[in-house]
Structure formats: structure tokens, C-alpha cells
Length: 230
Ligand SMILES: [Zn+2]
Image (cartoon, rainbow, N blue to C red):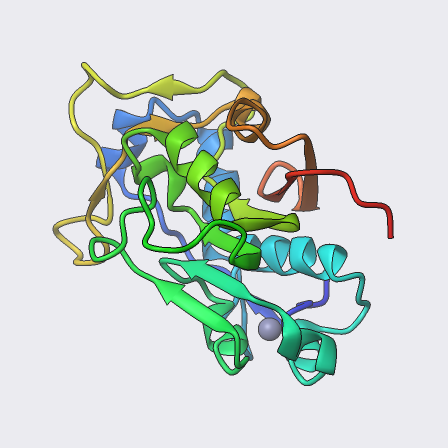
């Protein structure tokens, strides 16, 4: 495997899940193994994990480039891209050199009501953020609002492919980030499952494509408002 962010082909593995989260999510050992791989297998050069690489591939497909992301940002096409990066990812350091790059971070920017004009961006990105938003379809609809008609939304979300999405309302609160180990400590509202692809459609997008680096470990969703044939 090659890291399509930087071109390196060396990776290291680490475990990212902890017992409490495994119990809260009722994960099987096979599900634990693939989530550890999705989140914990990282490029030794740029630090991108598999979901970051899946997201990079979704972007590369949208902009129709065979270059690594690191090489792509040096092109004139990249310099014209109006990018909104919501909450950042392992790609942010690479993309943030671009002149029309905008970063939006919770809580100063609420994904469900963003302080941007309609049709302001060509590319909206988020990575493992949607599960923390109380109303994910509203958040996706807002992503669509700020995108131009031929723009694309590319994102990742933790997905348990063997079951359907469930709302955690009424269940004990669950957080990403172990309070004993530090880390990000955001409450999870939605556990996405095999129907994750329906959310952008229900939010008004007309087509959905799924990029896979390693199934089911690392996938990224691309949603388009309208189908433009290049
Ligand atoms: Zn890399």
C-alpha cells in the first residue's frame, strides 16, 4: 500500500480502542480489529491514518488527479479550489497551504449552522465529525448549502457495516477520547451503520460515491449536489 497523501509506503500499527468504548458500542472482536486498523494504521512519514488516506483518495477523484495530495497542492488547479475543512484531519497540514483554504472548528463554528454564504466552496471536508453532531442530516444539508452546484462534500465517519445506524439517544452517553488517556472528548450522538450512505441523499445531495482503501476498515464518502460530467 502507498500513502496517497505523501507517496510513502511504510506504515505502523497501533491500537486505538479502549475497553469502555468497545462495551458501549457492543463491538465484536472483528469490528474492534478493523476499527483499530482504520484509525491506528499510520503512514510513518506524514502520519496519515487509513481514513485520512481514504479521504485523500476521495479528494483526488473529485479533482481528477493521479498525483499525491502533497504534489497536488503545488498545482494551479489546487490554488483555485475553495476548500472548507471542518474540524480538520490528518490532511489539514497539507491542504492549509492553499490560498482559498478555510478551517472551521467546533464550537466556534456549529456544523448545523455555519457562518458562510451559499455556494461559497468547491470542496467541503470533514473526518469523523458527523457522529458528534446532534442532527447529522441538518449538518449535511448545511454542507450542501455552502457548496457550489458542482462542488463536492468528501468525508469519513466511523461505520459498523454489519448493522444499521442507531441514534444513541436514550443510551448511556458515549465519548470518543478516553478521559483516562486524554484525547478528544466529544459525545457520540450517532453510530453509523450500513445505511450511512443514505444520510447525504436525505440531506439533498443527488449522488453518493464510496472510496475504499481497505474494506471495511477505511472508506470515505463523496456526495455531489448535481451530476456534472467532466
Ligand atoms: Zn504519508
